[in-house]
Image (cartoon, rainbow, N blue to C red; front, side, top):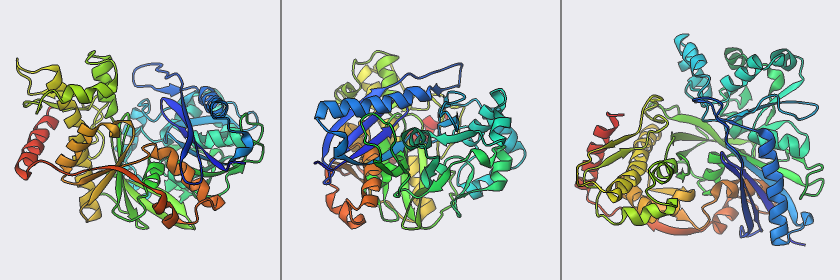
Length: 490
């Protein structure tokens, strides 16, 4: 009998299931997309049942393709899109409304009202987060207010809230639990205690009765019941939000180590150890993970648009048929010839936090070609990360020696070289770039003893490539000056 870990990586556009053996070799991997729902401008929803179906169908299909039997799977780990919010009936497991996705902006008015009440600083001090519709707190309250009878049902204990990890766990096992990394993204958890905070629940008008139990990241969350593709009793024993899972999957176990996930957006996290570092530069402070009773924290900065800017060139402007073609197109020229692109198609994230920012193409002439614009887009994706990493270094009080990278766009060698150039830091790409799923597998495997400790994980982790800066400090400084000028035009 094989001994495989099933990692469920439930993302914004689809669900990926990865089967890994005890040496973290990938036995099989499969992705299934599901529909995005846009009821009106600024609203983004998912059908939770579609997420569940994509999860089960992917497990079954992958098992059939690889010949893996349910008995070969010894445990399950879950990682997920984080702030996306679901409220469901505790008895039936049926959602009372679509999942409200992390990108959704419908509660911006509520957030503005809380700011006007002078609550932002006290909320940030407790949660490490800024007041923004991005997080779960106002999404929960919106559902309870807008769905007929929901708030009264919640008060009676009939409803359950969860981020996607918690919803999947409930469907897999019947348990209503979450982990500390996902809980820290709700605006409802006190970072220092790792518990739901009664004052925050009052601020966001969320009844405690709907909340899941908060666990660490590597322990028994429950065992499977009546799930196609999995034996009854299979332990679900690893869970983490996608970006924290990627930090762990990148073996960023020491304070000061950092990673950047290049996906739809760019998500940068720096391990700050067992110390809560409150940012002076409008970064987020978050729980990275809890192991053996000790919580590790992280600083986080997000650029909302990264790979999505490349998709815009593909779908909106027809520059190429496939996103990976941008590397060849951008390589047709040696420079962007003074063209700068600011990828703020959905506002600017950390450290600027300008939700009204619009994307910018600046510096074009009659001589500007598709290749110049493509190269400028890649440079813009890399340059926006410089702002975030410099803010992190200032908050943490130390210089970054290397940045580990993952996600689909990390396979673009030109982009990774640009990132090394602009940061003047070594960029390290791992052999396995699906580090979100890898992190979930590691958490699950640690609980079962598949991996004995973090040193054991370090021995298995391998890199694929390194990129060091190839430009002069004067050239770098000129790029950064021009970038700062471009930012003013959003």
